[in-house]
Image (cartoon, rainbow, N blue to C red; front, side):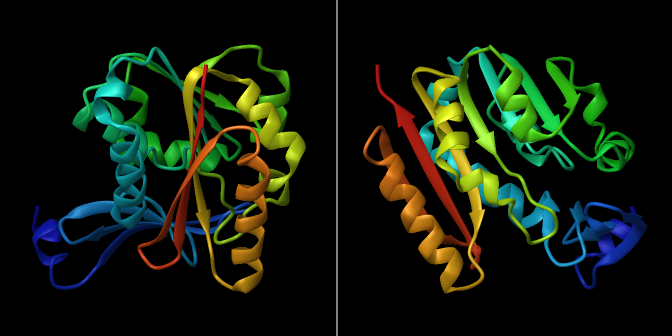
Length: 220
């Protein structure tokens, strides 16, 4: 409790570990809440939770409450899962795909992710999982990073088409992207222009300075 109180004055690091995929992983008390960070960016809770909450709000909490299956590609500490369950009161099935088992250990220890009964965690590569699964989802959240780097496959036509194939009619994709330079900006515009020919696309630019959300709706 003392650390939580003092964290309003200065961040207090309580755990640090090296990860092959995410470099340094840190758990810190900041402004009265626990956050999970990589070496250069926020991974869960803190600003990332605000970003994805904003995206979910844009889709509509009432719509989300009526959904039966949600897929999350990139779990990390699971802040968006906590938003779905604790804030929105979502009661449907959540499947989380995470490639880094070390992050999941931290998420279970510090954020009690393993106590969410409706959550199924699958340790797998997001690309491989999307290729293999035959399930259909009402909402697919893409939040895949290795520190500040986003894998190129996320923006390739093959992957984006496959993700949209996994959507039910009237389903949504919520895609969290990071823009650090003009190359990233061009990448996003190209991605949106290609998706826009097939589905309804909305862009929520420059959230928390460097993040841009892309929302795709698959109409019936």
